[in-house]
Length: 167
Length: 174
Image (cartoon, rainbow over all chains, first blue to last red; front, side, top):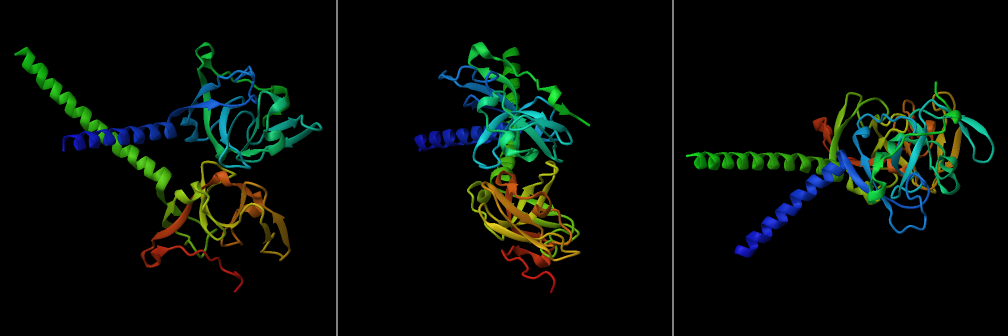
């Protein structure tokens, strides 16, 4: 009877902890690893490095879906909903943006969409091949690098302003 | 005397802590149920007539089938609108990736129809009332990641209480 009680208490504790943890990571903030070199040099500056950067993702921005130029966001891939990518917002709804992919072209970003690009344009699958991405796919905003210790710090908000003209 | 007072405070603090944890756990449980299992909502507007009425019908939607890819053609789904991410709309799913969908471009004026192939990872959604619905016919196929739930049960109005069929009216003109 005694061991059963202890087990029951332990299970109860784990369950409570899991519920609270899941809620916090859904609604407020979570920590995720960044894989690949598409956002180098902001994340994973050395491609051969074994240690991935871990970043803090805040979810408060999902209440109103308000973003600014240069925000780094996590979003679901439009072609495969199980994959998540980290990219930088270059253009917001209504902006005119110059693409530098194949030929120089100017296009308008439709309502409710955004233009996302990786910082390392040489190896990044982003809006240059996928087109404008619905904001509804965005899952959170990356604010800080939390691991490894020598790289702890806030993520800067910078973007190529000469390519974007906002209304 | 002082020690006894401290003891009293301790039990009060413990009681308060236990109560707070219980409330927090309950709220977290609500959130997890709502986000991962099942949610309810209201459908307004003319776009899903006659499945949903104009005035607002209450429904239950499950989140598990979208998570495990168990939605199929004919299901009514909750979709985060591609035009305004703050809105969630209810539409009928008519094509999965790789399907070719034929749709009437402008049903009010002509019966010219077009056929498109739904690209990888996307789905095709339309309202049941094709005369008054903003759907894939305007903004094209949408990524599967925007699908948030499958509506399976209607709660309100009471005389329509029951499970939601898979069918779509074959010919809306009749």
